[in-house]
Amino acid sequence: MIVADARRILGLLSEIAALEEAIEELCEESELARKLRSIPGFRTISAAELAGEIGTLDRFSSEASLALYLGMCPLDKQSGQLHGTNSPRQVNERAKAAMMVAVAHHIWEVPESRAYYNKKRTEGKRHNQAVRSMARHLVRVMWSMIKHGRDYEVREVSCPC
Image (cartoon, rainbow, N blue to C red; front, side, top):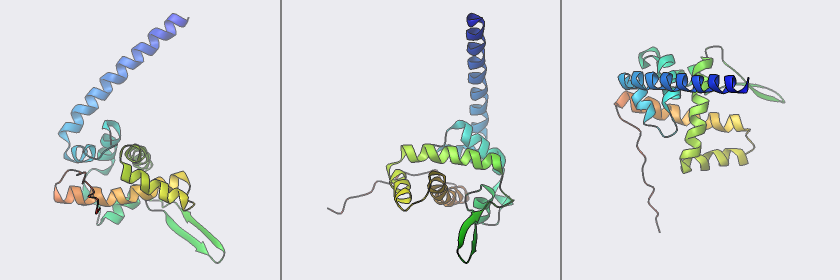
């Protein structure tokens, strides 16, 4: 029985690899997916899912509406002593999940983003709130990249020493 399970697992791993290869080929055909993949941490699966769910930026009037669609800007819910947020109904849950995974990887790979995340955590934000805050900044970057036809650029920070 263990041998049969091991064979099944190996078969599933080869199927996963084949699917990832097919997704990689589709990403090369999509300009949006190629742009998203230039962002550190945005890997093939996340970029492909985001590109598929977003489709075209013509659907969105501004980067704020894209952020709302991706679930990266919760709506404030404040009344007197109560402070909180509501999730908007326009959120695409699949795109939100892909964005959260991609941004988490981005935070691990980019030291400046990790510093921003840590700053938000020291301000008392929970993990998901800090990741969503970083993601909101990345939505602005994505919007600008796609509108101006540019890839993500890592700029060296010069020390004023």
